[in-house]
Image (cartoon, rainbow, N blue to C red):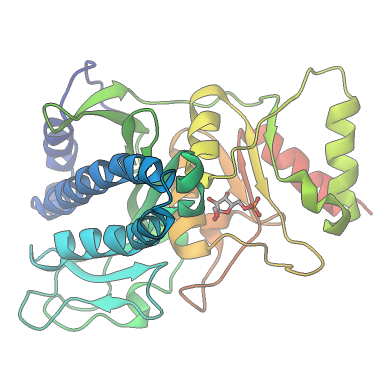
Length: 333
Ligand code: P6P
């Protein structure tokens, strides 16, 4: 049963109240989530100024703007690792930006949690001022605290995740979070530097009629998927198409308004483009907490077992009946 909170509750109070309910957390998960929020505030400030750099770019300073934008990925990656390394509650950060997982340096305590993160997904959209975001998922380690994290700690079922969320940097900065019971969104007041509860216990209806997919690749999809998409277009269900091309933005819209997001495999890339550990798992954890589903086309995303921390997966995510319809369409003989 999800707890109820009035709008305006701060993220800090929410974290304290919800992790208090998890007695075994002993405040370590609360510390971890606070540090993620801190890094999110730093990245939000920097992303918002990137637009300014973009304006400078209009005066021929494209090198400065281009270099600034490119550095945003690196800045975000460093901001989250710096925020997590020294507080004694994290043992490894598995980041989209790093070839190998970042293991907490010897001088700090190798703590209880692993954070899988895409520090700044969709950063190619910055120079067109489109919405981008951070995606994170949290595992509790299997190996003993104080030791160096191993693959066993992060190459594991998505069902082992204890929390996940994203931070979306758009017209406002919003942090979405679930510890497994309900999904809560907090909007940043940049003047105060605090996140305030703005969406409480988000729930998806069983079915929706908005689909979000890059149809430019349709010729390379599984023909059964092409048939499914053509079928909804021809239906009398008034389907709408929405595609921003930034995973966090497309997902956030669907979470608030209902919809199905698809990033399927193609002939050239059968596993698609999106990453399992730090994109699909965290969003699948969230969508299930909101009553939705996430599938790779044949099975639940959270039931998958990664063998590589950068492996990709096809992703179909959103209202549960829509996801099941796609699985049925793909399984037709
Ligand atoms: P395409 C952004 O580059 C990203 O990784 C996701 O945020 C987004 O959903 C996807 O790629 C868009 O990919 O192939 O449609 O441009």
